[in-house]
Image 1: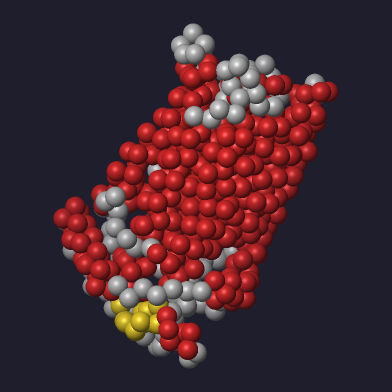
Image 2 (image 1 turned 180 degrees about the horizontal axis):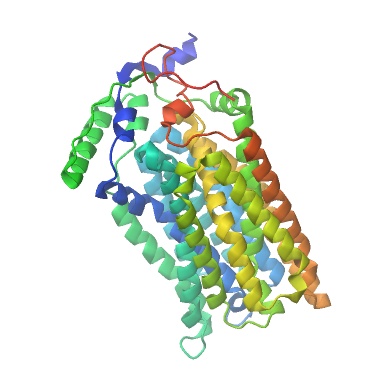
Length: 496
């Protein structure tokens, strides 16, 4: 053992906490976790939809900010860039300082930044506020996904993760409907409508912050960082609550894991883990994130602009709401299949099917009306929503616990930087070019790229994916601090 290793190790313990969490039956307490943590995706959906639906309101220089279509695409790219930076910055802090501290801090950053957006006085202020808002949301993705996976029992983890990530579209539907009265000149002054929409997002965030305060720290994080007494007390409280709520007796557990407790895990060790110990899983996560990031950020950030610019739609909120509902229903309906049919088959199927359907859409784009384009988009993203949600599930469960938040952040940042920044910029440029020629079919190349990337992601999953359904997190990827002992529960499949 090196001197640096001795300096961060604090002791060794053998614990049954992971097995006790995974054997719990579903109870009302788990809904507290879902509501307190999962609702962040509603905020993200609200943010993205408000921007997508309010493109026309932001363009006038008198009541808006004087943005062009390219500026709208740039704003989307700036938001995503902020999310990438925030994911990496807050992701490493989540692994070092704990899940709860960071999911409270990142929500606070989002709230302040959203208020600043509402008070934007010029495009530069707006871009800066969008970047800061993105940092909060990016940090949320890392902190929340890791906390949820470590608190939800293994038999339910797939459906809960997919459904929660799909709740992005609840916010999207709410945001699109919210913009209808706020963009109606007969209801409210157009100089104030879009500002109020952002302000209402901040109010919702404050409500979520109040609920989230009751969600405990991850016991798994606590016992690895030398705070096993706190972890034990939290698990006992959870067990007592679950027994009271369900009336069921809890089965005893005999699976334990021996851990070398550490104060922190260095970035070099995390990097070696991701790229050297789990190369196939690294390729899978990268492929899934790039595909879904380009697909969603390219299509959805500019969807409202497409409807208003080429198809004569004045109130895009109704169309976006239909599209959003289809996405949420897809994630909700298909989510149980990720635990029953399995991760590999479902991710591959949803990615390939949605990619192929988007390619079909690109070939006939010039013949679509606003209604038929929305209908086709609803069909495509009914499948894509579940698959995209499963990308976050995959990154959060196939790497060791000590690296979980940063791995989520890394793949989110890299995949989103490749697909999420380039997508809005490309589509903004394509829309400007197509507007000059008055030909919507000129933006079809963006759909083709998105479809091909989704199909490629599905194929990679089929060959390299991990069959993680029903398994404990520790058996999917043994913690870096776990002892190589023959203790029950310590065995793990060979890294790949």
